Length: 228
Ligand code: SAM
Image (cartoon, rainbow, N blue to C red; front, side, top):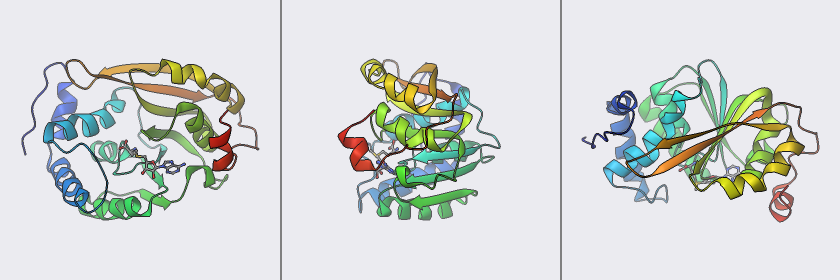
């Protein structure tokens, strides 16, 4: 496998992508993508940077070691599977509403021989209220105000929710201010990073500072019809 080395990006992270496991992941993703809809990005460099590098850049910002981490709507495994490949030392739960994708992930995990991953076929808003996580991640799942209602009820106080977003995040963030306040969250940090010379993405990092009122999350139909 050869993917290009992009000068302006983090060399150490790029080195971590240059392993057999990422190659296996790439091959299996493309093979299975012929059978089901997993990704529209298929060119080697695009997959390595827009999927893999984008996922793992978070390790520059947050330490996942020993944490209980939830990935909401991981789809073909982003961002949590690449994160698991470079640091296996955390407990991962993935919830996704699409059974085919959960089944794909189950086969992928066996292929890559990675441990401490729990796969749940279901919707994030239906996760048992008894469950709680130190860190919650979501990439390309929904708008921020909706994501906050899915994530904050099952996030531990002082834990972090990370939304992977494009650089045009400002309007979405403004729209989510009410949800943030009602659900007990606070904007902690916005981290901008490069995917290539020009393209930038951001992590919107939210800290849970107060208990979320018990009435949240509401049923999905309600969340969608009248987002906070
Ligand atoms: N995170 C992946 C990525 O960045 O490539 C997948 C993104 S895909 C566009 C969105 C995924 O989120 C789908 O697999 C969908 O089934 C899942 N999803 C959307 N809303 C969800 C919810 N409320 N609970 C669980 N999964 C959800």
